[in-house]
Length: 82
Image (cartoon, rainbow, N blue to C red; front, top):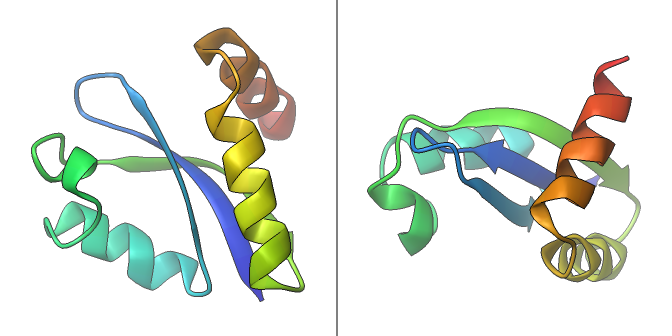
């Protein structure tokens, strides 16, 4: 299984990525071994994710989410929480 995910960083910013092991990746972000962007913004909190069969699908969704405005990202996060 592959995942596209959104993290909320300590400073309130949102980070989007993809992985094939969601728990391990979030743990890596919080240990400072994730993306360069999140290293100085820990702790991070997983606020949204989607699952995909292939890594290519997850990467395409990551790219699409990264092109969204913050408001658009907040909307998909809020809809998933319901």
